[in-house]
Image 1 (cartoon, rainbow, N blue to C red):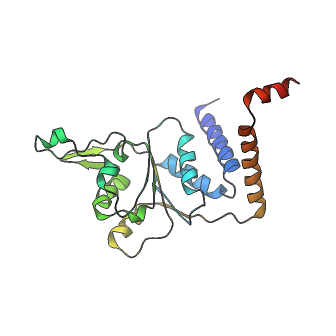
Image 2 (tube, rainbow, N blue to C red):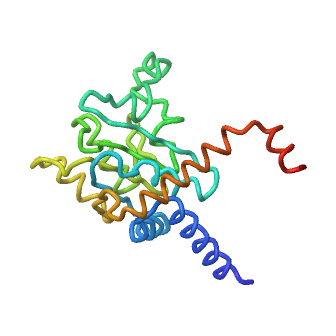
Image 3 (cartoon, rainbow, N blue to C red):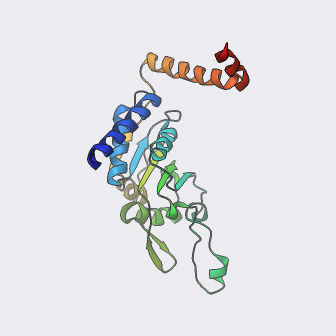
Length: 212
């Protein structure tokens, strides 16, 4: 079995796993996998409760143990929360340097919820990460390891030059809506019910029933 065939089979398996879990999301799943393989950012726009964040996490978790960054932005989110706190040791040497480990500049995969609520202090640094995969840390310009970033919003941005520039950084844009078919809700509730039933039965009792 050659390498291309192995990759193809893994992708087909990933698609099957995701489609079984996320109903009526076949087109979106394929777009997200395409974005992941091409290192293009993806933007999901839709109302709350449409599994945007769950799907984003599931896609990233399929491909190993890369570092993951997940954050819900508000108008009061600070750059420290996104890019890391300023190093006090470096400040004593008159250097403004952030400790980025564990934050967006060190992540392989990222999910940013309500991205259009980001303020101008965050947007400037975010634009270079999304477009050039570069983060300016003090006087140091460094490449970030970011492979794939998914952002989500409940609504499209208002008319704003900075937000328009942010919107342009997403080659993949997809409107996510609620499930349309009643059968999908039934399948979803049945799956949840089976999972709850398995979790409710004590382990010893399950073994005893199997033995009898």
